[in-house]
Image (cartoon, rainbow, N blue to C red; front, side):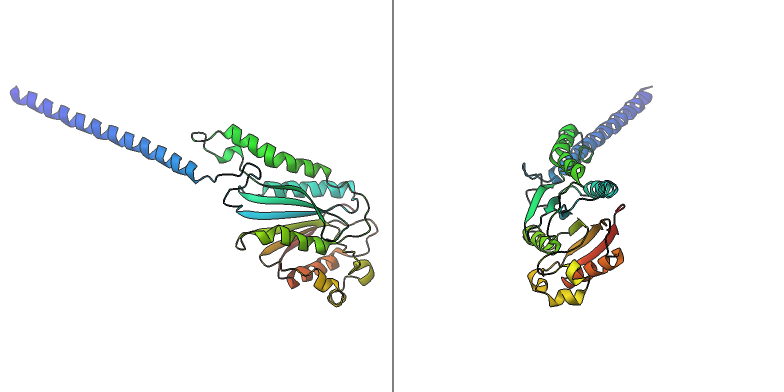
Length: 271
């Protein structure tokens, strides 16, 4: 009987040891989990209160040039708003977005928005952050201002000039030139793409690249677009005499001549 008691005591000791080991493993797991959450939160960038960009700088840059020098049809305006919304939704967290309106004065732009996507509420962990506060910051500082811009697209008054090349040059110098050259950059131009200035005008010179190179606009508006993807959202006005394929070819040549990357030419619906 004494031997049986010893066996029982030995088995009990093993049970205690196993329980202690299990408890240690659980504790280790909890500590590791908390450490993971802490490190994950520590990796989240600190944001500037005004721009909502990481204080270390944005991770990408998207500039949008909206041609408001002449009105467009209701159908085209709706399509443009849809494209604009898809563009906004595609800005990654930490990505900078700036929106400019084209004016009839060469190189003079009206900036209507500048800020980064701070990340929506579903991008944070509820154990270490407040998703509601993050969502509110995203809505008020990024989504709503851009929604307001989208709602006004299509409203414009007539202008005597349409200096698209000068505007692209200005955006390159004021937006992209100040950023890290290795950063992903893209420019979206929403316009009828009918360049019209004293230096060069498609109405006067046609869609002729040789005529452009022979004009003063060649030196006046040249700009280094290396590292920048340029995409066009083109709208055709009623009575337009220039085929979209020829417009696309002209601007593709212009972008590539200035060392940029031609990222597409999309004709919006309507006229």
